[in-house]
Length: 192
Image (cartoon, rainbow, N blue to C red; front, side):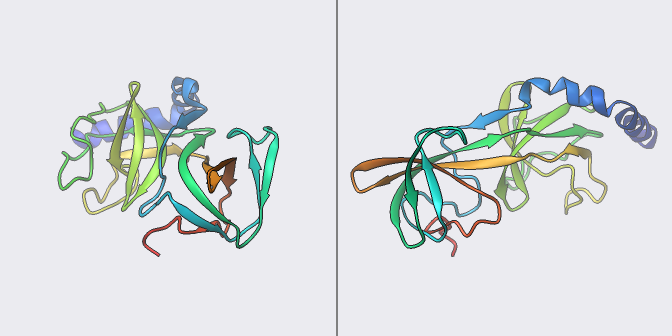
């Protein structure tokens, strides 16, 4: 019976990917405020390793207020993750019960539900959004020690921009986006 339900769920997934994506249409863009988006992420004193345009607001069209060059010292205050689009996963079979801190105990999607995949927290754990509420969950769409056959399928991966609010001394500078592949800043990763 379980195998039959899995086959039916996979068939529905293949036949209706567009419809599933449409269910999450309201989350094609999403902003997580006041987050540090990776394991060992740390706000505080940073030193720039790249050149960055500092903007008045966290938007690529906002006016440039300053330019940071490699070696410039700043203080990072907070950050927002802008997702456009959010990731999207479908639950194909029941998730393993929460244990050892891998999944928020309140996160209980049903088979067939779609889940917005937001930001990676580290150690295979993600922030997800389901029925309007944010949770943390293991990456149930990937094989792992809990599930050799994942109970979910990732329809699309999230595309994220990390915007960080900076100041220099007592003066507000603005916001920078830290692009993927950028050398970023010394001090942002407290693990080294």
